[in-house]
Length: 145
Image (tube, rainbow, N blue to C red):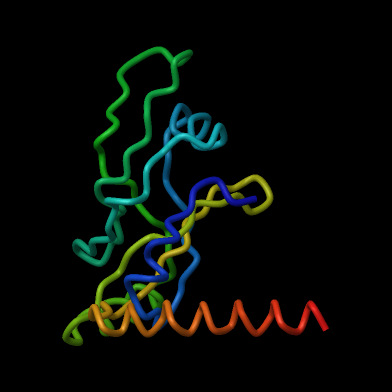
């Protein structure tokens, strides 16, 4: 079940590769995410010393939790070593970025889908919009006949 999604990323970036990563979260963060509270729009992925972190991913505090709630702490993403190396090598290429697209549940775990993407230029975005509208019109025409 999808909890949070950043659909804008599919428009702004040409997706090269996707990865599914587990997340290291605290209890109140899990409860808040299961209630579909959070903001992925300004989040990005950073690799530090061979570990992957989700930066600037904001989860509002769970109102019924007690104790200190650090909402700005980077969330650690759990990936295999060869996946981290693959991400690192693709990031070294010019114009590549890593960003989260979805937060979802898989069985009882909360996972994050991250993409490696290449930024689109303005004219490429216009072309994508044209193609989408043409596809939509074609589907409408087929549906009517």
